[in-house]
Amino acid sequence: MFKKILIANRGEIACRIIRACREMGIVSLAVYSEADRASLHVQMADEAALIGAPAAADSYLNMDRIIETAHAFGAEAIHPGYGFLAENPEFARRLEKEGIVFIGPNSRALELVGDKIRARQTMEKAGIPIIPGMKHVARSIDEYIAAARKIGYPVMIKASAGGGGKGMRIVCAEEDLRPALEAGSREARAAFGDESIYLEKCIEDPRHVEFQVLADNHGQIVHLFERECSIQRRHQKIVEETPSQALTPELRRKMGETAKKVVAVSGYNNAGTVEFLLDRNKDFYFLEVNARLQVEHPVTELTTGVDLVRQQIRIAAGEKLTLKQDALTQRGHAIECRIYAEDPANNFLPSSGKILYFQEPRGPGVRHDGGIYSGCEVPIYYDPILAKLIVWAETRDSACARMAAALNDYVILGIKTTIPFLKDVICHPKFREGATTTGFIKNHFENWQEEEGTPEGLSLALAVAALDELAPSPKGNKTAGPKTEVYSPWLTLGQWRIGEKP
Image 1 (cartoon, rainbow, N blue to C red):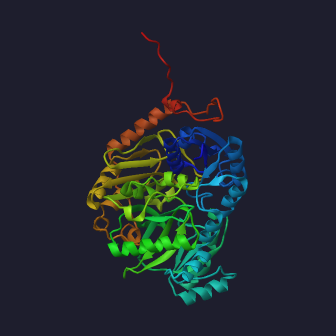
Image 2: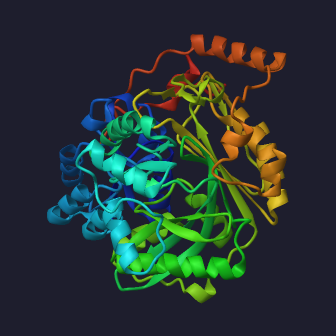
Image 3: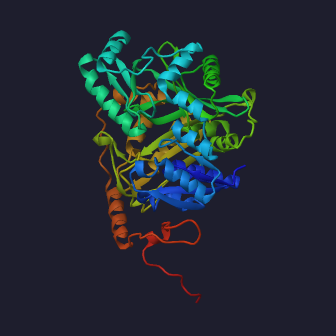
């Protein structure tokens, strides 16, 4: 087993990985940008190292600096989390050459499934149902126009080198195709360093259902059932749950076995997710492989009892899977809400700044995976996800009620968040019925506005802001050992001293 792991990420996912390392007795090495000196993941890790300027290209996407840091601190493995370099085959390839273990799929499988067009070609040859679409990246706008006419509108523009909704556009008419292609290509280049895009048939109002898979280095493959991820805005998931209300036991078995086949034909190892679209006739189509740990992995953990991060680390260390497909079961129902630093009443624009007050919900069946605290700064440079709120209960109705209650107890002051929006989603009658498709937000929340705040809430915000003015600004402190310039939460308390015993 590894003695030290470098976490090449930030925020809540870095904190999640650090916790797993701590439980396994592995030293955690955090890396951070200049904008993240005071971040929670830096405070939690056993060691920490500055790797660059705030921009992701100068820090969390800087392969040279991350590899140099791993060697300098003696890290045997790197966990990429999700986003940044998590699905970059060149990074995995370089780590293999450097003798550092990449806690994720091998570079060959990563290159295959990361190239959405090659993946589609491979799956089609293997007899796996795919969505009609392009089988290569076009060289000119005329090729895209011809392809769209052949596929038939509406079409979906997608980034070939990544997922997460980046670069994705729906086009319903030919006159809108060119500007959408240009915008999608720019966004893909910014997110993945690759501007390649392709077209797929847009299946209208489907369900988005994905299957969690684990594959070791010895040929063992299991799936850990499905997650329903249909509640999305701008093609970005915001609510996930398991089990899906749309699947029968037979359909679940069929889709699960198909997911395992996808993993086998691509030579994939470690944790990943096989994503499908499910249409109104209950026909499913291969969408893509997300070759990493998913944001929504906690709902699977709560219903199966399997720690996915721990499994990732064990697989990367060469251990065999001890999980057997026939022995895996789900119990109860779990729901996750993603908490973003965004203003849902203003087209979900990012909201940066200082968190003046933070109170996470607690209680039976409530889990909070976060990377924030009272007094921390939310920078403008990165994905705006702050945390994930996850609940578990025996039934879906109970899980919905528990999530609604937990969201009511969730307080973040100082910036705008998606919490009030998520409350309305969870309490919507159609959501409670399980009538969730990818068009849910558009159909029911197109012009959503938050209700006016209560006087008590405004008073609390003003009180916290006043207290915040009394606290000194953090200047960063130096500590002994390899962790340097680590921010101390004691600095948020204002002036204090240790009193003498009376």
